[in-house]
Image (cartoon, rainbow, N blue to C red; front, side):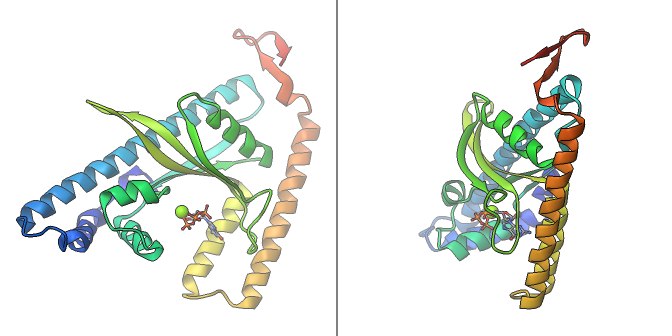
Length: 251
Ligand code: GTP
Ligand code: MG
C-alpha cells in the first residue's frame, strides 16, 4: 500500500465514472468529455497524492525529532494508499452520493489514507496531538475507537485532517484520513479484515466472538506493555536534551 497504487486500475475505472456521468453530457462530444473527465480525475488523484506526502513528511519529521530528543521513536512505520477508483465509485453509490469529481472531494474523506503504526498506546495520542497542533493542519473529525472500541473489538484512533497543498498556481486544502494504532491493534485489524473478506458475508457468530476475545486480550497486553515502558522510562516524557546532547532539562 503506497502512493504508487494510484495504479493501473485507474484508467479502467475512470471509464465507469465517465459512463455514470454520461447521461448529463447532453450532446457534448463524448470522446472529448471522456478525456476531460479522465484528466480531471487524474489531477484530483495527483492532489491527494501530494496531500499524503505532506502529512507523511510531517510525521517523519516528528519521529526523527523524537529519536534525537527522547528515548524512543513513537512511530514504528507508516503505510499509505490512495483509494482505488473502483472503491471510490462503489462507495459513492453505496452512500447514495452523486458520482462526480466534486462529489468525491465533498463527500469522501478517505481517498487519501495514512496508517501510522506505533509501539505503545501513549504514542498514538502523542503523535495525534503533535500533528493536530501544527498550524497548517485543520482537524475535521476525530474518532477514538481506543477509548470507545467498536463492538467487534476494533481499536484505532482516526483523524480526518485537511492539509494545504501548494501547486503551480494555487494552494488547495485536501482531506487525509489518518489511522493511528499500535502494532498489536494493527495485527488484529489486518487479520480481522482478511477473515471478514474471506467469509463473504457476515462473520459467523462464533468467529465474531473469538475475534472480540482476541481483541480484548490484545488490548490488555498493550496496557501491560505501556506499564512496562512507564516503569522503565518514568521520566521520559519530561526530559529533553540540549542541542549538544549534554544537559537534560525538564519541560
Ligand atoms: P468507512 O465507510 O469504512 O470508511 O466508514 P467511516 O467513513 O464511517 O469511517 P470509520 O472511521 O468508521 O472507518 C474507516 C476505516 O477504518 C475503514 O475503512 C477501515 O480501514 C477501518 N475500520 C473501521 N472499522 C473497522 C473494523 O471493524 N475492522 C477493520 N479491520 N478495520 C476497520
Ligand atoms: Mg473510510
